[in-house]
Image (cartoon, rainbow, N blue to C red; front, side, top):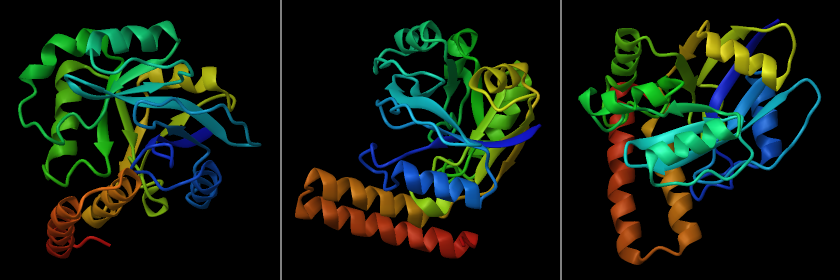
Length: 238
């Protein structure tokens, strides 16, 4: 059985996310996906089941090395210390994946000490190219150079972004264990396309509204949104 899975989606449980689980499910099915990992910021997804669709519980934790995805975890994962977060993910039977490693950095040398702890890295993230146009290309090159397993996800915060990046793999049955084993073999196909920068601006507006931002914060957002719109015009964002 061939499956398409978006391994990085945010729900409204993230401060900058807008989608309910029902909306995520609808969009995934519209995009021909058979499963998705909901990885909210420092918050594990609540358990859910739906026919012919696999929900992969996950989390995106903040660490000193950047964002770390914990896939197939239902227990809380501590943010802050990278090693402690990886240990907790593995103790929960999960997979530890470094998210968008080159979205903000250009040098991979700083990542070398943590490579033995990782199960893989995200080589395609639909939002990663906003600041670094070569972010995904660099992640792919880095994975190849160091023999790392490859993962991909849209990093969708809005419905329009779901399915913009995904992995395709072969499994015998639609089950969490079967998919986990397939991912760990590293035999996956990666498909992805850039998410327009304006979607990042929209999700940042959501965060400000929920947090009761100041007028100054909204003014800064306005400048950021304008930059995103200009970037989309220059790069042909759809």
